[in-house]
Image (cartoon, rainbow, N blue to C red; front, side, top):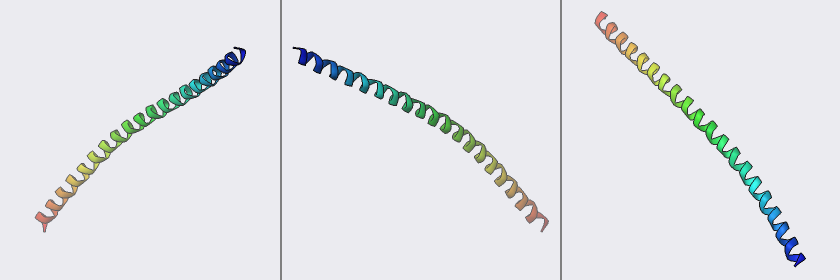
Amino acid sequence: MKTQLDELTRTNGELVNTRNRLTTENNDLQRQLHDLENNYGAFSKNRGQLQSQLDDAKSKLEEEIRVSQVLN
């Protein structure tokens, strides 16, 4: 009976350690996911701004080409 109790106590300790390790890993992964989501949001915002700047530059270039062709 004592041997079984010792075995169960040891198993319980191992399970508690495993649970604590998994909880820590889960918290770390959730933090990483949160960071990635924030980075993705910033990336998307920057991409939109760069696309807008590119579209503006293209429009200006097209206008300059039209003016140049009219003047020549």
